[in-house]
Image (cartoon, rainbow, N blue to C red; front, top):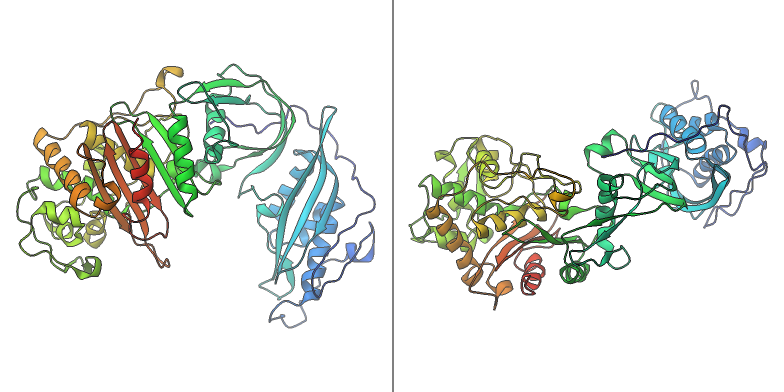
Length: 554
């Protein structure tokens, strides 16, 4: 991804401090209001030397929170970076970011206004003026700080984190004002309609990613912006740089995507009806992504989420067991109430069992023990190789046009390996990954999903090294068809047959009362997958979202 770390012009001397007189106003019970003036005693107070005093303990008092917040905000507003940094528990990190806030972000005429205190947390509003090469524009946003006791002496101090300076900042990120480096882009759907966050709120991270990838080659010219420039930690998480304030507009280039306006609008509507829901729709025959939506707008869970997929992973596992002759759609297969492997006792939902049933019956009802019981006959790497070689997962080589997480199926052993067979353990996926799994079953071979056609920039799409045998594929399709017609997916998929298939999933998450609900399915030349975090069973939560979109056709 292209970065914009340099500003086109920097001052050779430290910029003059602006705002000789400041006003920091705190409202709320027990705080009253206070006003500070540059050079005042309160502003100059330094940390108390507590070497000869017992360490303070107990809850922070109103006076301690107020004074500490006052000292930090006053020094920051006056441009006294060393004093502001000294009021935090990480003066080095605070110094670096606060210095860059003035020198690189070029923010002046600063006013900080504190709000109502809640415990040790003090919200505050930031107002300033961003200036670059004769162009200025006002900046306003809200942030907060939290006062804690310093470990060594119990003195109150600001707990440092980058989001104190700006809520979009993470460790290693910086704010920079200058020529954007990457021109803006206008993104269009497959039929030429413009894609905007006003019409499609979920697409914010996607549009940022498209600009990162194609801004320099799409025919536009750069403007002047205040931007969050991502550091190493954010890059590892595949977060794109973000525009905070546009001082002057660039000329946008154009990028055509594979998205369907009709399906994208419907996906946005469906996920908005639930909290923490995400869905992806794609075309199995080509790999084109037709819709991607999240009810949470800050992070693209649909493409970049890393969640245990639960029993939807049994699609991949079933293909492995059938290939190895360890299961067959119509063959008898054990489904006991529990099964112990590697020291762990695995259960079915409500400890149900199927006596004398077939593997198809176990798949359709999502019997965990039917899969766990086969772990002893598999090597530690079998599932990993199946996911990589047949389904194109867990290789970190997808190039869809924006950042993605391509699934993870690590080699594990003992109980963790057994848990992986049912989509727990170390297995991690997102709706894009699981939509691709359903698409692979429908088409018979892996087609890497993509949002921008490879012909636009000459990308090489990822390929799987092998396909399933015709017999394995036929049985796998029958498992998914039967589940859509008579199993745990039947209610959601009602009326969508006969050319369909589905699998539900529920993934347990530590310290979460309800499991994440998953659903992956195909119908005709559409495949889709969705997750509702902390929603419950997949058939009841993600199922209706996925089925509604499949019912719209391509």
